[in-house]
Image (cartoon, rainbow, N blue to C red):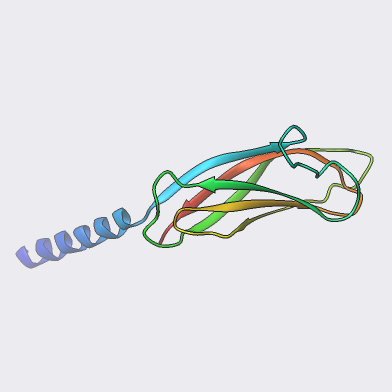
Length: 118
């Protein structure tokens, strides 16, 4: 019985250490035609806009990034085409790159991000 209790305590501490070693930070982003250098609503062809994100605390290792789009304001006279991706991920931050192409006109886009380490 003592051995079982000892093994259970060891497993508990190993599990707790593993969970506490994981890090997570999250936030949101927003860009629209009022943002400096925003051109997703103009012209034709491929256009992109970058949003820089700095973590409040640096990660111990380069984290993985999860992105979601929560709002898009696009001209309904054209097809809505957009791509949102994380670029230049480091321990200190990353860049959200929003891209549109062809005749699509995106007037605004917002979403959430989450960074986590394993």
